[in-house]
Length: 420
Image 1 (tube, rainbow, N blue to C red):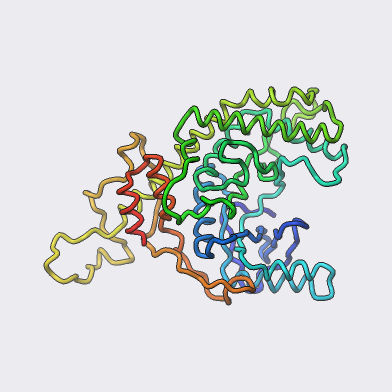
Image 2: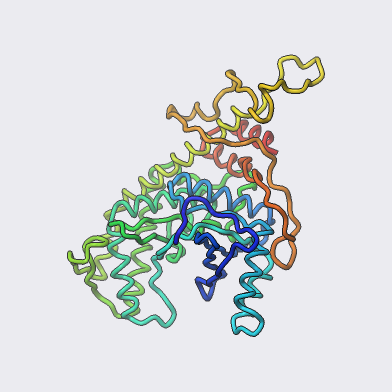
């Protein structure tokens, strides 16, 4: 049973089964006693601090989820108590005498990783054709499945939106900054009974990227693609041409010159013959859709984050007009239970950059994520879950907004200071 709205808490004794989903990656399907399923995986954080990694993952997930409207994109770092439950259940399933014990035990003890949970998306597939030792027939079958999915404007427009978020959050593990496809395995889509498969922006944290830390101040050159139509078209052209090249190179390696595939996804009765040399031209028809996806995705990022800032500003306590008297206790109608009174004079951030109406998003005024000491054996000792740690918009996000002229540099600085 899949679950795609909220990621459930892993409480004591709640795990009934843990199943490895890959031999070469630490990713597991976890089933809970109530039947809900989720994915738990280890994400490399390289030299980034644990606190910065957690915040960057959560905010990257927030932005991708809200911009693409995909509830399947919902990363949550495991709380220490959740990791303890997962660790105990995994080692119980693969005890010392089991052949796979050493591999799983080493994964649990790995340093420089963050364990995260996310909804189980079900029949998730990727665009990677190459597999070491893969037979021609295996390659042919997957190519017949993949190619019709990307002979469709909806898929390319959605992939452009995913690329826009990738650029903003500093993820370079799907596309290079110039648009060239870096990892076909990270071009992911969800296959269901629906007529058209859905492209998803999962695998969005790239610890090897210089710009993955959303707490690092400043902008970077690649952001210009989000604000420049010509650059967005250049990105789209290189993305599509490299996508086609990766597919045709594998088909050539396997000696496949043409294939018969459905004319549209899910329409097996309507067939078309696709020749290998035609692929680049067939995909390039959708360059405009990809570029539109980038630019519309950038606008959705702007709307979401400006909404967050405006909501935060509206809810922030306002200074009292009388500064000469000592602070007095809040009257009952301004108590914490009701929240601070709204200030009609508080200006909305970012409205000078666009006449568009901005949606409202709640942003509780809470302190930033505290630092944690890294220990060699997974997360810290079990403790009760803490809420509200990822509410403050990271300084790196604010500075990227300023670099794109969505807010002023002064607003980015003052908003960041107010959050710290």
